[in-house]
Each structure stands twice: as C-alpha cells, then as structure tokens.
Image 1: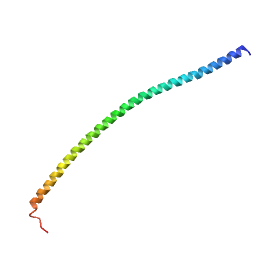
Image 2: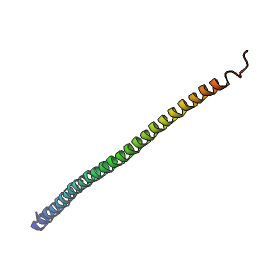
Image 3: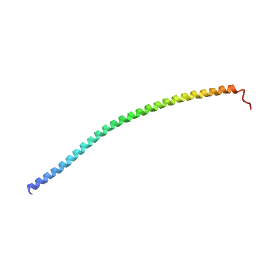
Length: 99
C-alpha cells in the first residue's frame, strides 16, 4: 500500500477522533456550566421564596391581629347593646301591656 494513502487514512482517523473528543469535552464543559448556573438560580430562587413567605406571614399575622381587635370591639358592642336592652326593658316594663 502506498505510504501516502496510509498517512491520509491515519490523519483522517485522527481528525475524526479529535472532532469527537472536542465535542465530548465541550459537552462536559457545557453540562458543568449549566449545573453551576442552575445551582445559583436555585439559591436565588429559594432566597426570594423565603422573603415572599416571610412577607406573607407578616401580612397574615397583622390581619389576624386586626381580626382579634375587631372581635374584641364587636364583643364590647354586643355587651353594650344587651345592657341597653335590659335598661330599656326595666324602664318600659311597667308600660307594656300584659297579655
């Protein structure tokens, strides 16, 4: 066989292996890059999620406190209305017709 043809075949084989090797290395580098970016994104996302959760919890706690204050005021109003009803019953008890 001609040494030139053997050299061409070996060079072509080496070239093809180099292309596949470079592609494999590029794929590995890209995989590592994507994994690093995803981990960074995951950290930022979890921090933002925690801050949103804290904000929502603070809002719910404030709403619960407002609700408790409202219930206390409502209970006071109910007791005052009941007291007024008793007082009015006492005042008008003698004037109501008995039947």
